[in-house]
Length: 329
Image 1 (cartoon, one colour):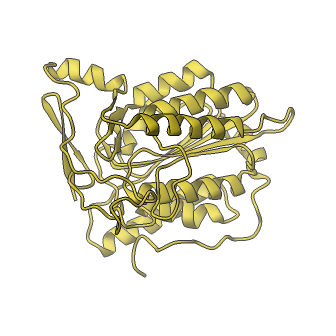
Image 2 (cartoon, rainbow, N blue to C red):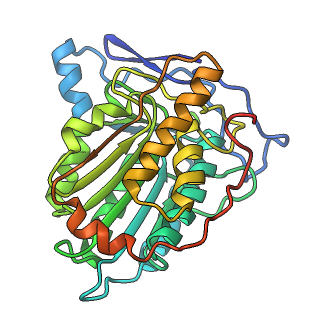
């Protein structure tokens, strides 16, 4: 499915319809997110195409009509989660995991939550994991994902890690477009996280050693901007392609299911996992006659220096996938 988001004078294609049915069986069930029911606001009104492009690179975020009690509660949750993150251990290559769902569709919250658990187990990151995800249909116990809160989380992690020794493992899941990742929470939160802005934030914080895994349509747009000597970046699609599986009722997107739920539960290298996941996704897409998403991966020349000791501790047993598969088998 395709949705058109109007931003200024441009319409940008994403991978799900703009107006989605409410999934909750009870109107006031706190374990379900608010529905997407209103048009995306015109957040770059009156700008020329060039001005709009520059504005989108700055990662604009808009929130409207958020109840004050919810604002306070979300701040309380985020503060509690940040304060629970343990500092790095000198002489050890520690992984700090951030997993964030930037859209309130249930599939993204479910995927972000389980991805955090998989990455925590794979990289021995207990006590150094932060998950930003709204309600997933069963739980509503975490701070919601947003652009601003992701930046706050990155800042905090940078203060408790040794940026010359430790590694950031960032997993993002959302809808996407050619401008970047779409932040969209119900009818109250909107924004675009651009490659340029994410790059500038990571550089400002001095986080150089990083594994960036980006699940969204057009997520390949992040590869040129974020690639560096000490970056491993994996994306769900090429810059001009959609990715699949993002129906709200799903437990996984294609990319999340193939890479996180299956391959990263195995005792194999990140590079091998990326290759195997790409082959699995290609098979699913061919089966359903979908235009290939072409997942991307890029490993900087210096990644092996710190990835090898980090992956030396990968559990030897194979973990079992959880949830409903993204494609019926």
